[in-house]
Length: 248
Image (cartoon, rainbow, N blue to C red; front, side, top):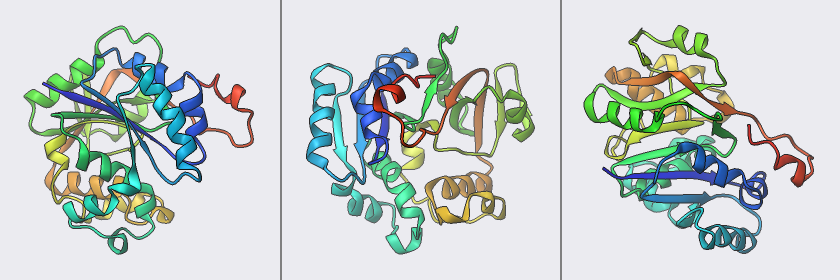
C-alpha cells in the first residue's frame, strides 16, 4: 500500500505555502508517513525564485519533489484524450490536478488545495480509515473530511450514511483521497445536468468533469462524519508574515 501527498501553488499563494510553516503543518496534520510528497508549481511569474524555496523544503525534509506543471501539461492532456479547447477556461483551473494524477505512481493519492488543511488534533487516524474504505468498498471512489465543520450540510448532500461516513455524489478539489488508477482513465469528458451547478467562469473544469463521471456511473464519495478540514480563501494585500499565521 503506497500513497502520495500533493498540493499545488500558483503566483498568488506560493509565498504563503513555501515561505512559511503552512506546508509542514499541513503534512504533519495528516499524521501519516507518505511514500512521496510533492508540490506542483503552476502559473508563477518567476519559476527560478519559486524553485529556490521549493528546494529548501526538500533540503529540510518537508517534501520530496517539486514539479513545474507546464513541463508535463501536454503529456497529461494527451494521456487523458483532452485538449485546451475541450476544457475551455477550465484548463487553468484543472491542469495541475490532471498533471498530478498523470504523474502519480503510488496506489493512492491525497490532494489538498493550498488553502485547505485538516483541523487540529483529530482524535483518530482518518487517513488510514479512508484508505481502508477505498480498499474494501469498490463503490466508493473518493474519501474526504467534512468541510469547515459543516456536518449538517454534508448530511443533506448525502444519499445514505453509516456510523462513520456520509455517502453522496458531490466532489471538491479542496481535498480528496483516491485510488490513483480510478482517475488515470478517460473519465473527463462526461456530462451530467446536476454538474452544471459549478461556476460558469470555471468552464469544463476538473471538479465538474469528475462530478459528472461519478453521477453517471453511481460512484460514491464518502465524507467523514467525525472530522473536518478547514478551507479559508487567502486574503489579498496581506503582509506575508501575517498571512503565515493563518494555519487554521
